[in-house]
Structure formats: C-alpha cells, structure tokens
Image 1 (cartoon, rainbow, N blue to C red):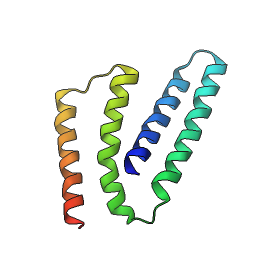
Image 2 (cartoon, one colour):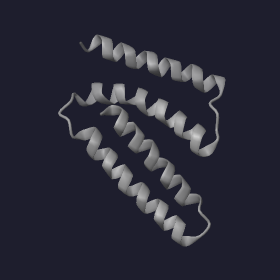
Image 3 (cartoon, rainbow, N blue to C red):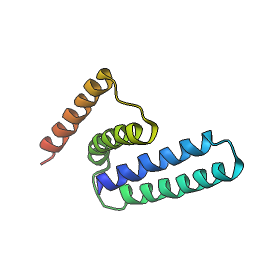
Image 4 (cartoon, one colour):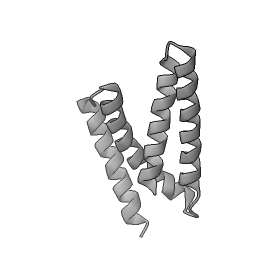
Length: 103
C-alpha cells in the first residue's frame, strides 16, 4: 500500500512538474489536471487504512525517497549524486529502525 502511494505521489509530482514547464496551454492544462487527479488518488491511498499516522509516514518516507529517485532518473534523466545516495541510505536505515521497533 505504501509503495502504491509513493508511486502515485511521485508520479503526480512529475506530472505537475511537466505541466508547469510545458510551453503550450493545452499540454500544460492536461499535465496539471492529470497531476491533480493522481495526487488526489495518492492522498486517498495513503490515508485510507487505519494505521498509526506517525509510524505510517515515517515508513512512507523510505518508499517516497526510493520512488522519487527512480522517477527523477527515468523521467528527468537526473542520476542521484553520491551525497544523495548516502543521505538516502540514512533514510532507509531510519525506516528499518522504525519498522523494527514498531513490532
């Protein structure tokens, strides 16, 4: 569920980014509208289950970071820097600690 939510959020953000930077009005409107719909679906997906909100978002940050880097690389051709990968390793470690200490 968290992975789906992260894919929806990063995908929606990418659509909004494309819309904001589109030159013509019709593609701009189409991307922005699609982005808004996908981000609404993200909000419903991440908040539908009755999970502990703080723990949920602590774990969600890991999924969001990983999907954001994948979308950045694939859609925008931006490879993560070594510093970003190091920081990301700490994010993943933090998520592992949250998951481990929560059960």
